Image (cartoon, rainbow, N blue to C red; front, side, top):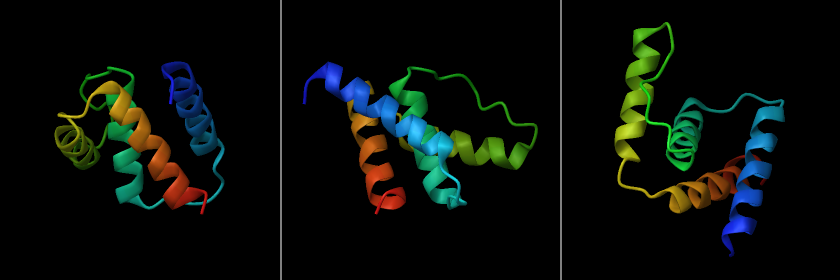
Length: 86
């Protein structure tokens, strides 16, 4: 898969998630969050007003910290395909 195709597929997956009309399980949301942040090289601290949510998000980021940008995009796409499109 070329980088251009990967970026296009990733953006399409992000749009799909943003338009998704059904509840997404919390564990899937946290994985998507972490992959998205890594894919966009956004390592800022989570910004929720709820400390518990920040803790879960920070934990998800820690679990994804050794993934590079391209692999994060691929994992995001795979997760969307497997959990939300199937």
